[in-house]
Length: 197
Image (cartoon, rainbow, N blue to C red; front, side, top):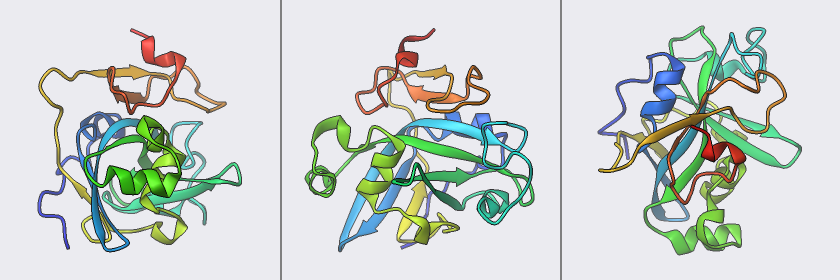
């Protein structure tokens, strides 16, 4: 399986990409199933950003962030969670979009069983997304044009709007509004920032 409707905007500035990824889909092959989820919340990071893994230049850990746009950067955090990012920009420039939350479009019960929870709590946070979709360091550097994880173009639905806020859970550049989410969507992470205007 290869992506036939791959987004064409991933080389644009990372903040633009983070907004445009809302409504796009991941298509994941796992346990003989094809699971589609819709991206509803993102955060932008680049090498000029003190909160970014790319800040300070390329290292062994962050090398994937400096690859061509359209790869997956996966890292392990807090000794317990994986997080995944869509790499943006051109090779040699470190930037990526953290996928903070997704909405399951099918196989919802399967994802609930994998996570041991139900409802929005299945995928309303970056560690929850990776656990539900079986994303770990083995997929670091994965080309999102190809199975077992594809990125597919999507769009906002009629009546949906995008909100921005400061990012969640960071200690530097805390007030920069680089978090993007579909306003009022039930699968968006819980945060006091959700009500900012």
